[in-house]
Amino acid sequence: MWKSLLLVGVSILPLRAESACTGKDLQGRYVGLAAGLAAGELPTVWFRCDFRVKASGRATGSCLSSTGATGPLDPIQFSVSPSCSVSGTSVSGISNYSLRMQPHKRGLIGQFRVDDGVNVIEGPVVAVKRGK
Image 1: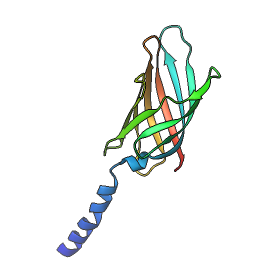
Image 2: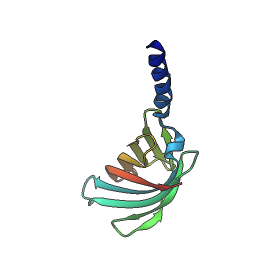
Image 3: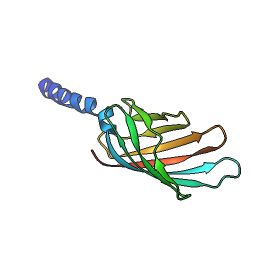
Image 4: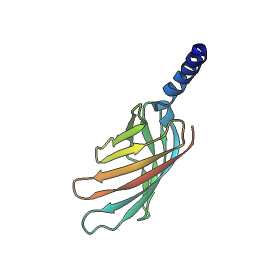
């Protein structure tokens, strides 16, 4: 009986190790949607972004906003904790992201905040992985 319990215990150990998230889980191509409530008199805005996260955690891509504006995504540097929390800050420093992913899954969910010193926009963000 002890041998059986030992074998079961040993066979579970790799599963526990695999449950941790790594940068490799984040790496890939995504489509993301964010809707932000702006402070003051600014209207609610939404963004649709296509972006790629490289092995370094750097995300680049392009976005379309509800105002009709299109342009490059301010590059974001993401980091992933073993508990699957994902945080990111844009290179310019005006955007911050606090996200969550499940290990070996294909999506992110969380919050974003943009503060350019004049306007503040914050709200939910979701992103779906489209491939490598």
